[in-house]
Length: 226
Image 1 (cartoon, rainbow, N blue to C red):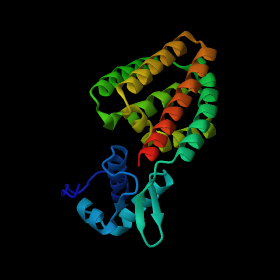
Image 2: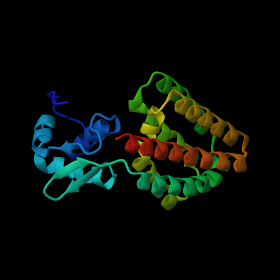
Image 3: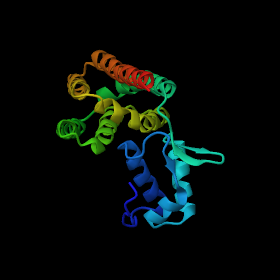
């Protein structure tokens, strides 16, 4: 974890640092409660404290980091209350967007969805955790992309970003969880292709609620075992 890494040289320095810190948190390299020592990490990444501080503020806005008085930045705790709020909002808003989006999805959209499903299957079974959340988000956003509801879409994009960490955790719980996610995504795309709006929106709601329930049960069990 303390191994020296090459200086980051892409995007802006703050964005580069945020991307790298986000990666470490989402992959579990930095677990909840881990203290992010600004001086050491800024030196490791080859940037000054100012862009590193901007990166921490960005991650705080995403819910991945908390900046505490007299302690500095720590990785946010995994919270059942946050899971409930975030996933309930997704279960409410995503079906609304999907209902509006389905009639306008194009052949090119479905070709891209099929490509995402194919890659998703590969990375799930290869346990390539780094791509799970990204592909999940891409699939959901593409399915909802034709809704022409920019304000609601922006809210959902933020919710997907905030739940990315939880999604990766849910998929890592068991092979069965990954199999369910894969089959539900494939069925969801198939229903959209058929134009079965009612069945697709109902499945999407169940899909989100199922992930929420699994995550909360996992956190309860982990806390009881401590």
